[in-house]
Amino acid sequence: MEVALEADSALALLESLRRMRLIRPAEQPVLTPLTGGVSSEIVRVDTSTGVFCVKRALAKLKVAADWSAPLERNAAEVAWMRLAATLVPGCVPSILGEDEEGCAFAMTFLKPADYRLWKGDLMDGVASVETARAVGTTLATIHRATADDGALASEFSTDANFFALRLEPYFLATAAANPDCAEALERLSNDTARTRRALVHGDVSPKNILVGKAGPVFLDAECAWYGDPAFDVAFCLTHLLLKCVLRPDSSAGYLACFDALNDVYFAGASWEDAAALEARAARLLPALLLARVDGKSPVEYLKTEEDRAKVRHFAKRFVVEAPRTLDAIRNRWNKEQA
Image (tube, rainbow, N blue to C red; front, side, top):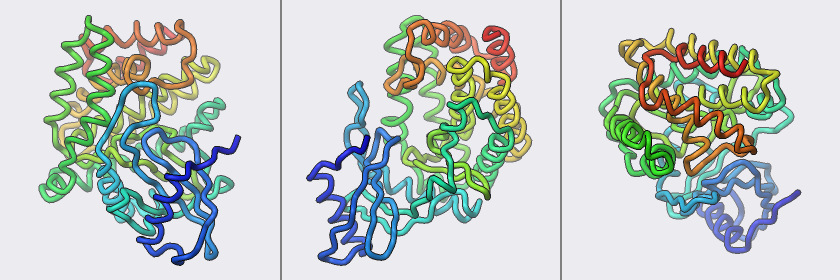
């Protein structure tokens, strides 16, 4: 069902497009809202000269919980995408313009016929090890190239954004819902906030990754932050485990993707001791599993309380006492899903 754009939003976007000089002063392009995001308006723009996308940050996110975030996060997203494009050419859409006043930016429109959403594949039970491996390789490349860089740490000192978009809604909100492991979650939030090793995307979810012929294309980097790279890999692996609950018949494929991404990522993690990096990821993974049922952004496809309780029961023991390896979590998950 097509969703209409509200008049105020359309006006704001048109003003942004004019400031970016992407449309003529009197031009009235066709604005078509695109689905998928909760933190921004993402709109297809059909102009007299071509098609592209524009993204505008929202002060209040489109979720049931009370969740707000700084509008300035668009600047960090654009900066991340521009840098990522130089490190892994083709891994992001091209930036066409930026409007800081309107907290909006424009980027190339990637045709669905040429770029599939990775989440769509996974939801259909299509688990490509090649895609998972390519995602892990891209992440490792970006983290390795940005590790221990003081200038980037200063440029992406977006602590307030990351707290509002990740630490508070995922860890602290989940702590409030689970008093029996609140202390561990609060400690994890604090420790993650203090860890600064590389440039982090912050939302490496299958819903933000397109699968193209030349490799994965990353979207939605508004959580970009110079911090703990373990967050990115744990965030993505969380979704591969959760898909096993949705489609138990495809669990072997999802776990093969988990293994492929895990293996290639840590093989490329040369900027620090890989065991220490993995231990942080293994601590983050169960907390993120729990957050996706009890935090402010629960996954929409775990529809029954039975499924949510299964994830909750599994995650809590590891939140309180995390193992040192991701395989320990993955193997226990596989055993309990069988």
